[in-house]
Image 1 (cartoon, rainbow, N blue to C red):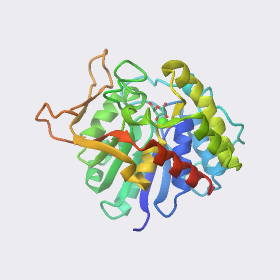
Image 2 (spheres, helix red, strand yellow; image 1 turned 120 degrees about the vertical axis):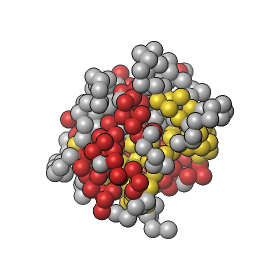
Image 3 (cartoon, rainbow, N blue to C red; image 1 turned 90 degrees about the horizontal axis):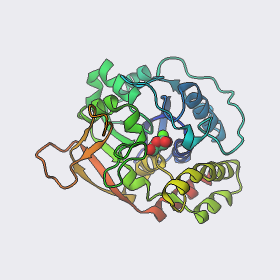
Length: 313
Ligand code: BDR
Ligand code: CA
């Protein structure tokens, strides 16, 4: 099978960075058409900086990186420096990027790519708030029919939320955008906290990254070292959850994940549960299924894939 064409929409973030590195390390499976940045973990000037740092770390300054929305559709931006550090990519010391930003707006790039390529051949991989994707759907609704799939990290159901008791960060930051995306009609695959909290960088998995003894291996070990202090303190877990790489791993080895095709709706009005992904896991409503909501991961298989692929960079 030829490599699947993807656009990575992202707010790096250490785990976004690892997701991008995994994609760039896997050209036989994934062709990265471009990276579109959104405000999320940190403000847009930092997410665009960090995305370029990651491309340069991977030796891929040729990948076009676009700036997108600098705020959610209808709310103030909420950021997550408490998790990712002041720069969003705290941990390793990496050089400031020298590659330029690509010309044009992220939203227009998404629309153009979907128009240029045959219908059903471009997959969107959102790793942050869904603002850019929703803006593209609002500006050009016809693109919904041309999207192969939207494979996104966001939400949580049995696991609850990580920014409020009921909401996961990416959905909480822009619930209105998430609502537009979940209603757009394109096939959707969701990697919620229920899955990503099982993808933990334990000490031995972190050692395996470091033992690659390459700039990428060491940087990933240092990123996950930094990122893990927050989750260890909060959850008492064995290490940092690698949320976003679940998306790019799914593009390479979908059999690592198990889930159900169900109805998922986004809470957009209640302040108490704002941004909750209301997942009809047990099929107790007659609302039509609109997403494959993952519930489980083969974590050992996932880390084996990740370490093998990162070794190539
Ligand atoms: C999500 O929020 C961000 O902090 C991570 O990069 C991930 O995309 C997890 O809730
Ligand atoms: Ca992210």
